[in-house]
Length: 223
Image (cartoon, rainbow, N blue to C red):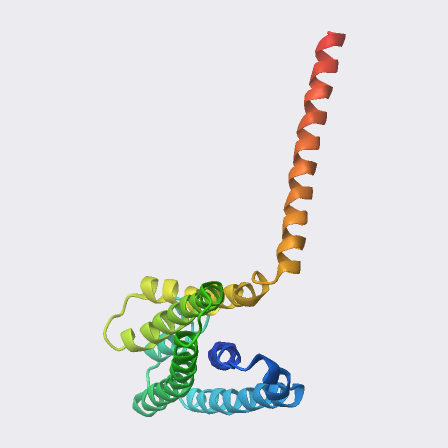
């Protein structure tokens, strides 16, 4: 469910960046639309997850089944089933394809709009800022879809659980942690707060080291 939500959020972020009329931004991305997009995403991914759960309940497993994974990945669980998994596999691949095609299509359309707007810009600094923000988003999109689709598409070909686990870590843990940095580190206030935090940490570390040296010097003098 959360992987699917991350899928939709990446598409929403691309749509957000594709709004090329700054004066109309607050009108287009109003709180009502933002809430509607989030609710629609939760609604879709909830029913998709529920379908998977109901289909998995019809499968049979042996007692003491151990899944060679760090969480119950659907593709790995299906390998442990003793009953026929043809229907579940079909639904799994169709849902993965649909949940991948529509958000990816939205991301591609958004980036087409961004590139066409950048080609009309005359400011080099503005182009650099836009490419910098889009580059961060593109890295996360490539990481998420590359590893996520790789897990499900390769599960039918290979039986290596180690490579599947590493790919799953990338799209379930690394990608969500990178999402806040896409926009936050572009903000001057966030950069200033982060710089002050790092400078305080460095000064505290330096003060602690200096205090320890003074203590050692005093103990040597007493000896």
